[in-house]
Image (cartoon, rainbow, N blue to C red):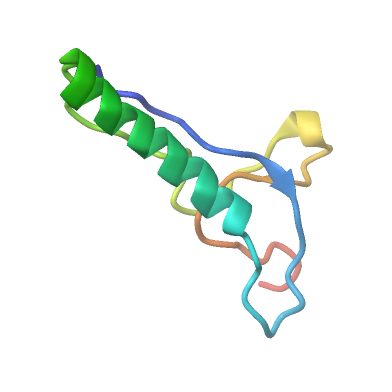
Length: 79
């Protein structure tokens, strides 16, 4: 098994100075990775990899192009 495109889409903004408090995103990935670990060691699942949904932000047309999925925030307002 190789889970791909696993992530959480949220509408968030950056003030341009302080880090975005996204503990929910960290918890989301941590919980999924821990579940995979349990599946491997408790159930013998054959997991060969894991890909989160985007290192950098991608856009979601279902979120009025405002939902962000990436691990790294991309400022689309200022080039």
